[in-house]
Length: 65
Image (cartoon, rainbow, N blue to C red):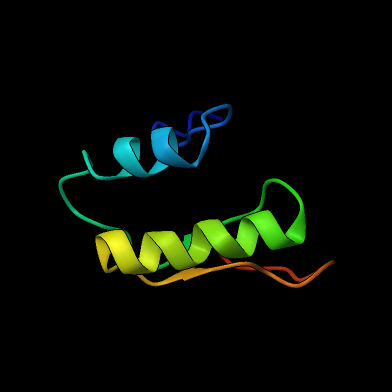
């Protein structure tokens, strides 16, 4: 499977910088990596810096992509 819009090993600054290069923002951005507090902080930053709708799914939550 090819997922051309995925990032895996950047810090928060690198992730937000990378996301900002996307021409058309996704309708939802799922933050699924890292400790829960860090994931929530990144979610909040994506919302504040980019104006995107970002969520941290609950443990064992399934989402339709």
